Length: 117
Image (cartoon, rainbow, N blue to C red; front, side):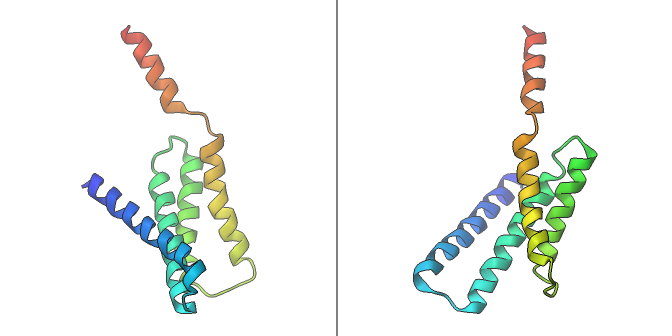
């Protein structure tokens, strides 16, 4: 089941990516662009929500979950002044955390492998 959901998620990301790239050449209508944007931000939000359950630290879990929820919800709330700025922060913060955090799993696996030997 997990494998099937992962494949569906990748297919949806591929569809949105192809749609965004083809928009450069085909100039879709505003409604189509809006649908592509909603799909893109919703998929990023879902990825952050799922990623929030992977981390061991509660603060990182909360940051991922809050950012994922905001990215999904921002598509369905009205415009306000800070909506785009908060959206950019919510996209970049989990990426930076994932990039700058130490690889705990690799260290744990190495320690376990050394104990076996």
